[in-house]
Image (cartoon, rainbow, N blue to C red; front, side, top):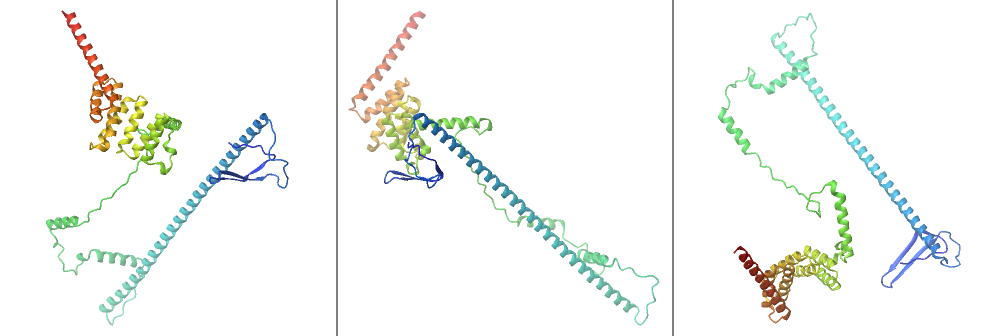
Length: 398
């Protein structure tokens, strides 16, 4: 940590710090608060108490600046949000106004077309009336009418006549079509069925659903959100203290082989929890890699997590197939680790079976022979104690 108490104050907003990894140097370029004044020396000669007071003042000033910047940033974001809302409201209003104008123009267009049609219908009605009068009384003059004729409803009557002519042309007296002739009921049903069958089949759709990743197996609830976050935070701190944290890994370090080497180095350093974390993260990336299960079994055995050690050793044995000379060393280690786990769990018969398998792979291993004989002796001793207890019970019954 680099700390220096300068002679005068500096302008923090216009300072830069450059780190050169090639030359292993750090270059500070700072601007004086009072320009043009030459300092007699770079730093002040202060006592420890004066340095502590200045350090506390600098920390308070830095915190105050950060809080002011954060407040300014929040105000700017709030102003931007309000501006976006205002722009959206303005756009919605313009869209509604445009729709209203389109509706008004279409309505006026339809009304003008209707007025034109009424005028044409009225003119046609007048021409037909003149032709009929001319045919009935050709050469005769029409007597004057005693009352004026009201033509205000002629356009409406013509509209009704036009609609009835198009819709009910079969009911006109001039039509020679028989209104009782038509399709029978079975024919109508068959035609309806054909129409139904000829409809195109609707194509199936697909809905894509994505789920939020979650560390816990239970559903997420607001009432337990704070406790879950606290637990995850504690787990992250524990992983960081034990020497391994998968969140701090670089992209090139997210490799199963690198994690295997990392776990082995942590095992040599005695950091078994860190080794378990490294192996577990590697298993997530490569679940079919037996070396990772083997290393994690050894770490669990060192931590006295006996059941997990037995499970990982069994999983490694399942992956080490087929049984060839190339994986003989790994299979031997799996049997030895699993035998050690069973022995510490007082499952001596299961441990004895693993020792037998290990001796078949390495018959000249003296350590294996000693463990095998000691396990056999324990089993024999237990059997003898069981026989003695059974004989004592029989004597008591007699």
